[in-house]
Each structure stands twice: as C-alpha cells, then as structure tokens.
Length: 124
Image (cartoon, rainbow, N blue to C red):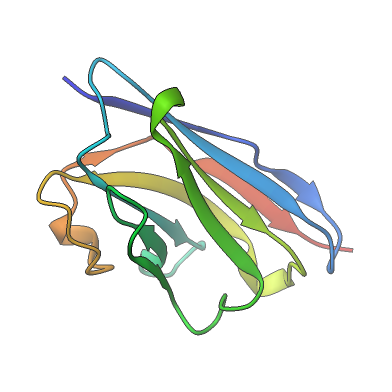
C-alpha cells in the first residue's frame, strides 16, 4: 500500500518562501500523477498544482501561477512544491495525493492516495 508523507510546512511571513516535500513509501509513484491540494479552516479542499508521471504536464491554479513551482524526482520517489511570494490566503493544510491513472484533473475525488498533510501558516 502506497504511503505519502508531506513535510516542509511551517510559519512564514508574507512574501516568504517554503519548499514542501512529498515522499512515498510502500510503492513507487513513478507512474502516477501527483497533485498538491490545500484546505483552509472552514473551506473546501482545493487543488493547487499537479505534475504528471513524466513531468510532461504541470498544472497550476491561477491563484498560485507564477509563485509556486511543482517538480518531481522519481529516483527519490518524491515530489516537491516550491512556494514563493506567499500570501496570508495561502494558509492551510497542504496535502499531496497520487492518481494511479496519471490524470491531473485537480479534483480531490479523483485522487487515490493521500498524505496526512503539512500545515502552512503565512502571517506577520
């Protein structure tokens, strides 16, 4: 059974940066699309970014485009999300998730495996 673990969250000031990591165990994610999602208190979980198995397709929601960069290192069984120019509205729990059919639809219901999340807080 594939296990995903996020790390790299923390408290940063507006305009700061964080780099989130998603590491897999119990299986390989080399053939899977990996998406990043986030959820703020009282709000629905929303897609942030997604990367295909070969990195040929990278998807960003408009509210992070130009600020966030998704990447993967299949040799390390890991996916990363570089977050720059962070805003208070970026605050939330960030989750990585795997889609075994390699589709970056940014729909939480389409993902098959989830990590437990890492908390990102952007505040002055």
